[in-house]
Image 1 (tube, rainbow, N blue to C red):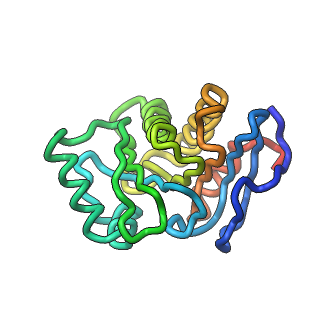
Image 2: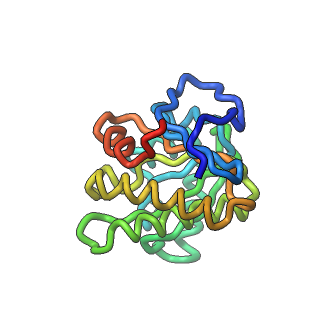
Length: 200
């Protein structure tokens, strides 16, 4: 794997700070950034959701309030038609008033379920598959399962890296060209950077 800075795949229009950048031989790129998820320069963002798509607090609440009622309506319709979504799944809704092509809602594991790391990898993989199916070329995801779901930061950080590496190496031609992990809190950032290649 080529680990060196590469030209940006899309202009970075926000004040997000790139903390780590990994370029793959396929031309795909993974970036860890400190910034605001709602200002990410990507086609779609991930929402760290629960199985009922009830976007009350945390990242989910912030996204829902910014997107407006259309996102809430679509979420409720999905749950009415499919029932509560199991851990590891992902669904797409409108982004409403947000400047994205869509929001990918990923259902991460809660601490105590067992197999949290593998379930978190499966969750993110489901989200990447949604982006691929939609033809989106750039996505950004937050710290899934690291907040109220209480999965330890080291477990989360390892799962984030493995999910991205496995996906980009398995389906590079169809994968989003740019995947960004957008973080704000120092403890999560430290845990994630500890998992990144030495060449940063």
